[in-house]
Length: 169
Ligand code: AMP
Ligand code: MG
Image (cartoon, rainbow, N blue to C red; front, side, top):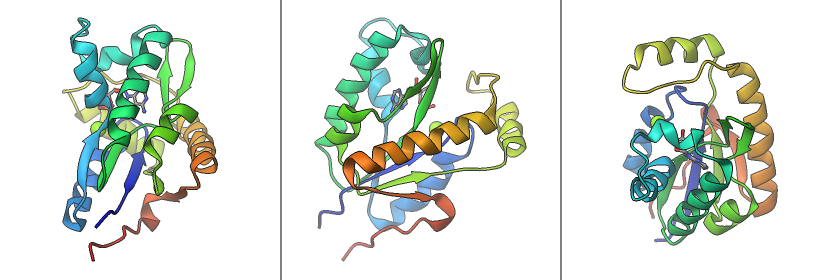
């Protein structure tokens, strides 16, 4: 059965990957957008996934486009990604028109939490290099970018506490 694509977004450290593991029980496979981008970037000498967002935005755009087109070919997947990325030149959409239209998700989920909870989770995760940013602001910007992506594709936009996944028939 074709269940389509669900996109799950949330600021770094919100616990997105942890939350998404539950979706495996519904017959979805998890695809990490950052990993798909990083696989391409490694061929060009990028050594750390946390260096991706520091690359010139035009390079990030190219890698993002390649990853979006690859992911758009798949089905029955949950995509772990970001509604926006804080780059050196500002908040950049993770799901710009060409990327979200290549993917055509059924649903865009925003995983949100209190900024202080996220701060706390980030400080415990030594495997990643997290930015020191305004988490509340980033979450507000993400809502707006997620709504724009939903508008362009007809996907529903939901917060994760209301997450309802279509079950396997
Ligand atoms: P993550 O492990 O989810 O934090 O992803 C690692 C990195 O991949 C992020 O810091 C971004 O640089 C990049 N990335 C993930 N999703 C997207 C996206 N939709 N658009 C652009 N870059 C992305
Ligand atoms: Mg993650």
